[in-house]
Image 1 (cartoon, rainbow, N blue to C red):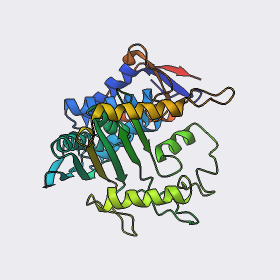
Image 2: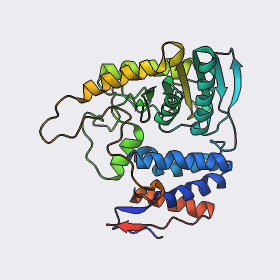
Image 3: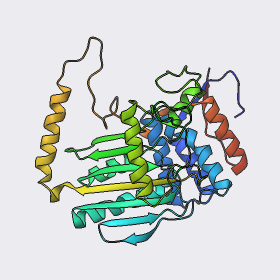
Image 4: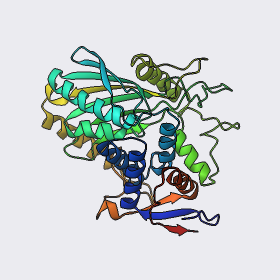
Length: 343
């Protein structure tokens, strides 16, 4: 479908987009299961209302592979193993695949030892960290995840600074509840994630001064508090994982991650723990809401329950992202998804 300058977005089903991602990932060398996993991650981000980590990322991931930076067919390998402490080399594969395998390993080792830590270096970016925390919580395992950018992507100002010195340095955590959705947080230590910033710029949104400096550089969230957390992520996700950290040196645009996993049942009885979690969540949510306000939600809970077949749900892709999809479709000789243009 040709690009129309009067179109603001294109709407198509999640199933159509899923198939397109699978075909694109397979075309650059990902295995069938890995291509499907990447599609799941991107489409789940769209359906969770996080387009910053959805379809807009696909062209970036394809370009990284075509330019020789990403290695879609590679798998992470263990390069240090003490039992409860493991370090993986991502060997240049997508972070989604490396952290999927790292999370499974962290769960396994936490079940064996009570607590475990898995570090991952030399991977591409992993997108949202929440799905890995959710997966661990399903197994009764609490997690803490710290992800740096291997010293690259310095787009965040230190408080009072005029030149960027840090990346967006996300952190995430997951706590089991009685059942999903679990208590999961996932946020950049900058005011917003770089993908969210780019998405809003594509839509022509006026950016708040709390997000960016007059020069367009990101600020840490919460001033000195976000700055401090960003430094923590740099130390644990970067230095401790064996990755590079921010400096004046030029470094590869990769991700370093530290995942800490705790098997709740080895510290206290799991049902008793989740009962207590549900009790304090219920107390917090019992607060009366402001006039006209929405019901209180805690991290991990979506704005509305999923209904119907997710593959049939309509997803709106902004025009710039759609154009980027068209470009890679031409390069990879793929058919674009069927879609309706929206003006």
